[in-house]
Length: 261
Image (cartoon, rainbow, N blue to C red; front, side):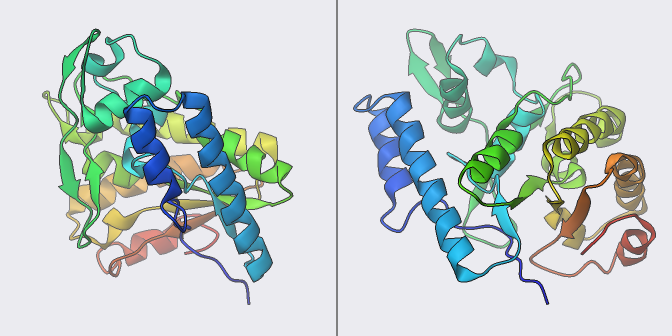
């Protein structure tokens, strides 16, 4: 029997991340100080999980704001109104999360939407007809290697390709189906990179599989993972869902080359 958890609370037992982030927004601490607080919390979390005897310890479950927003930035799905501000990478991220009013411009945050049936809200990814879906950030790999330096072999966690496309808002004429090919390429590259740095398991979060699915939905899910899983190499893929059951796609899941569900 092996034990695994979906992810670990990131805010800190005394809400250290929340308070450090608010200090950063008020310009009371530097980005370096904020990043150090985050790193300290990650190491504390890894230590607690390792000492618990947990077999599959997650990494990349950390976020400064929201996991869907992290995925949008990872996959280059960031509206130009934020990137055109000319801010640092972290401040561009926070501009999308909170809005920005300053000498570089004035923009509102991305829309928020309720995360399934919880009180958590996520930032809604915007995809327009010119969005180029590609791997554009190394956060999952950096946090995996950071954990290794702490002596912890982790199971990296990423939002799955289907949930990413399903939860996005399409602002042009194109739909999720038009971005399947580029999304496959991006996730293929993710798997190849994890193979290269020695990951053994990857957790792919697909909570949208518990929603009512149409024939088009299941077709997109199958298209994505039939191709993505061809590139898993020696990495094993754990398909993780939550909030409900997968009655609409159970047979589809069983046909695909996942190593665990």
